[in-house]
Amino acid sequence: MNTTELIAKIDRLRRKKNAVIMAHYYQTGDIQDIADMVGDSLALAQYAAKTDADIIVLCGVHFMGETAKILSPTKKVLVPDMDAGCSLADSCPADEFERFVKAHPDYTVVSYVNTTAAVKAHTDIVVTSTNAKKIIDTLPQDAKIIFAPDRNLGNYINSVTGRNMLLWDGACHVHEQFSVESLVALKKQYPNAKVLAHPECKNVVLMLADFIGSTQALLNHTTQSDSREFLVATESGIIHQMQRLNPDKVFIPVPPVDSTCGCNDCKYMRLNTLEKLYACLLNEQPEILVDEELRKKAVKPIERMLELSK
Ligand code: 13P
Ligand code: SF4
Image 1 (cartoon, protein in one colour):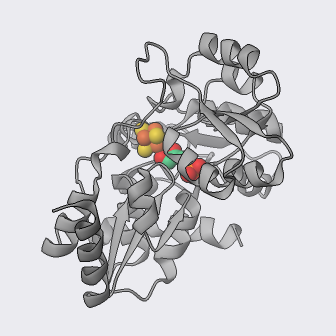
Image 2 (tube, rainbow, N blue to C red):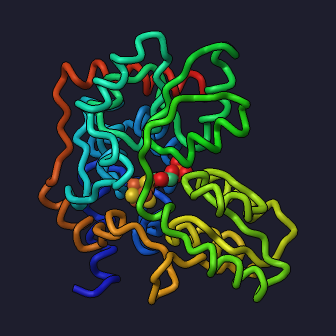
């Protein structure tokens, strides 16, 4: 089947089954183009909470599908590839996290959305990179806070809020890997280019950035900025939307260390393909299921986030 036929079949199936296709900005361009909505982690959660579709197909990684299921338990939530996990979520095993939280009983527990439902169940408030500062600013100045699992985002939020949150020592394999040497060389090669970085990047990369933000914030900045050239230090899938919205501007991906392709791709996000999206709509598999007792615990900190994000 060629791509045009595949797209037509996906389109027919989604209408017939009243399914909505949601995609994160780190998906490949073909998946972003066919999706009913494309967004950052916060927008995906907000959309999943209010959609009236019978089926949600979440083109992203497992925790995104799981969050959608937690918020919309009566819907069927499908993912194109069940193996699309997340190294950041994996860096925070739920049993270790539970012990850590129990050892700090007087702390408010803030977790990034890039966590499993079992970690969210031990969390007071979930945040994304779009709303982390805003939500942490609502906590009393003297509150003791645990932040998990991303140490880079945690350090960044500490620096912009003046907090001293206790950080879980986790990281994302994509954002940890940007080559500072290559970034410095690219800055010399493109002296007018602005450096855009996601706060999951190491501090040394953030120090070289002109603008730091979530995928949605980075995208907004590319349209609002007068600059014509950008060096992009986040997963390269986002460049599809940046280029689509700004056809006259130039976007150069910052490569990871030891790179041959020059791009920094999330191997989990890349497991999703148009073929798997079609098969998943057709067979209604793989399906995300969440134990109801766990869901009831995990939904509370997510709903708190959605409330505080209004
Ligand atoms: P945002 O889209 O919320 O910025 O998150 C990036 C990310 O790490 C998704 O895996
Ligand atoms: Fe997880 Fe990093 Fe991939 Fe995002 S880019 S899904 S944080 S591994």
